[in-house]
Amino acid sequence: MQKLPQQAHETTSRALLHGAFQAALQAADPSYAIPKFLKQLFPQGIRGRCIVIGAGKASASMADALERYALVHWPQAILSGLVITRYGHDVQRPLPDRKIVICEAAHPVPDEAGLQATKNLLHIVQELQKDDQLLVLISGGGSSLLTLPAAEISMSDLKVLTRELLRSGAPIEAMNVVRKHISAIQGGNLGRLAVRAGAKVDALIISDVTGDQPGDIASGPCAVDDSTFQDALNILDRYQIGPGVAPASILDYLKKGTIGQAPETLKRDEPESLMVRNHVIATSMQSLLAAQKYCLEHGAQVHILGDQITGEAAQVARDQLEIVRGYVEQNQNKDFVDRPGKFRRQVFISGGETTVTIPQGVVGRGGRCAEFLLALYTHSKALVGLSALAADTDGIDGSEENAGAFFDQEIIQNANSLQLDEKTYLEAHDAYGFFLEVGGLVHTGPTLTNINDFRILMLESHG
Image (cartoon, rainbow, N blue to C red):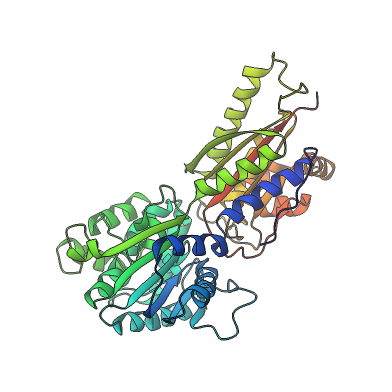
């Protein structure tokens, strides 16, 4: 990622929004986070066989950063391995003779390329030897990329269930409870296999979920799991993914698990759970703090609303808008702008992962970040001086190629001149279409990291 230019306090609203987003991305860049953590974790370096595996939208950049570090600091390490990332998410300038193989597969709905790559990865785990060092690189997206359904479940059935979960509006933590219990490799199964082979296991994790719990990230391939088969069935029932919607093979397998006829995920009382170390090396809060620092340096006062915000995207937008309006009401009679030492801009930033529930028969275009922003725009028409940006830190927001969207005064003028009915777009869940028309899409391409969503609202007074 390119370094941010140093800008004066008179940075435009648009530049500040995008600059804060870039600062958040930089804080989670594996080329920064991986070397820093490896130095702490292995102060004496690594010698001998070091096998690297992993999955996620940041796994290729994590592997690249690790291999570059090993070349300099671990001259006696024998490096090999394989990681799986999303199509188009490999690094642009890989090492000429890299030792870690990069495989690409589909996300968010898994495909046969991911299945074959996961089988190859599992073979590597099965070939581990006593005292090997296994490093597992995990990031968001790993649930679909690291795909190996239980023996009784077909890939076609797994795809059907994944699509239904994505449509349901279920939070990622709930979706992953289900996916863990129909997987041969997630829910701690990978870590269990590696420990039984005698390997030393360390998982390095970039978190894309609220709470930053290793078991929730990429369905926790090396983490303990407190959920059960019955929990998985309850989630499917809660989101109306029962008989006639979920494939029969999946429901049958989950029911077998409830009566002990299928193996459970890794539990805390298993000895293997004590022999796997999970390290969360980059989080949403770290990125929010980096964005806060950027905004402060550019003359804005910053309010962090939290890094674990969930719920329907449109409702979260209304909730955050109420916070901004409350700030305006509390300060409307105060001379808090355009005085020495005072702030002309008030910035409200947050992380977390919202959801969008798509009704049956509605296709929709866009993702949760664009929907959040369109709802914010729709309900803030009377609030003067508001601009905002919302984007997924992996660079892809939902169904289209954009990372998210933004609006400032120029975008608002464009929408007014085009006489677009934003409510119609919102009801159709077509936030992408709206921001495409007004020129408000945010394009980054794959960022090669993933620490969940980033939202910034900026209230500006012109005196």
